[in-house]
Figure (cartoon, one colour):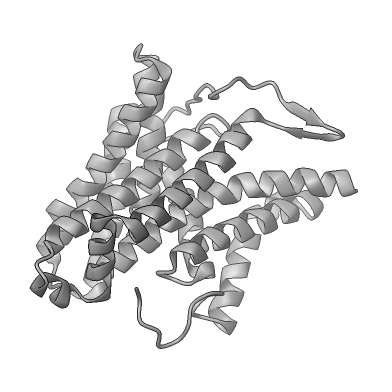
Length: 291
């Protein structure tokens, strides 16, 4: 029983790390532009599918990953420039509808480009499981966990120690004041969308080797990332990371000890409980100012 628990725990941390990266993208865009970007899951799909097809076309493995992540980033920046920026004076509901429309558009474009087939992607360092006692760990799981840690720490360093990171935080606090201080608000929002999409692309290329990918895979990943963000407290970056890990672990333990058929239902049930009893999330505070 204990070995099973550890096995499910490792699986939960692996899945939760992906949710954390997607949730972090939600938090980043929400902080920077007050927009809940429901196209975040499509960035994950685009990153994964681009890497798969570039590699299938003969592009070397790691070069394919880098190009795929850059493609996701460019798509995110295009979304901000062509849709969000054009509707900067629109209501919150309108911007949410825009992002939902963008999500449908990107999914449709992916269907036209890559079709309905399901594709796999080779793991970074082989697929021979590592055995530790009675517990087995896939090497790709370690890459996912380590990659998430590196990018979460790197993002935190970026916002706390770099001029651009601090400028984005200033825009999230008060755009007008930031503009009066000489910060190029439009440029900062564009960078924020690029970083958010980049995180989605990284999540995509990391998860592609352990789960088959298709044009519609971004929908559920986006919903889980949104749940992670809600669970941690919308707009709270570290909350989104912790929320993603909690969601992944509970989901894995529930699937292992209760039934795998309830895996998604368990996640959404948790979110309903949070919305009923603590709508601000685990680490959100009512009436607080976003920074």
